[in-house]
Length: 128
Image (tube, rainbow, N blue to C red; front, side, top):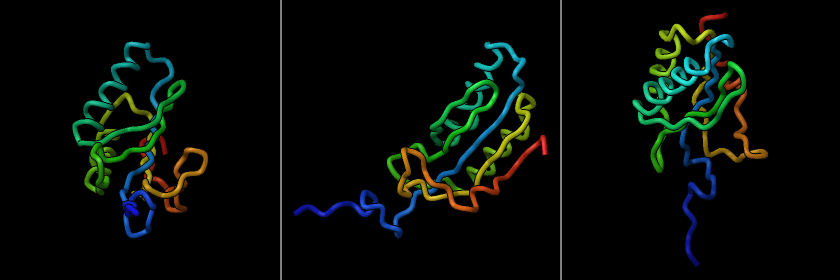
């Protein structure tokens, strides 16, 4: 019988960390401006740092989960700080929340990762 990978078995000793990210931009911006902001976010904050973003948005709020763009590995505190810096220095971002690093391999509940209680106390920016 073939052994399963510890990652596939969701063993606690195997973790790949990621984080929840949410940001808001002005509702009154044009479609072209919104598309440019989202393109900049993906290319400058996510792809430039070797990350992947799963999520989306409605209206002026985007929300999702950030992981390392690799078959395995974790988002680091340095990645988290780079994301916060991009959000803080972008004048088109009104508010943002960046959660703490959490286990992205944790069992899922209806397709959504359960966040720890620490994830409910995210880093908040600008509009506080």
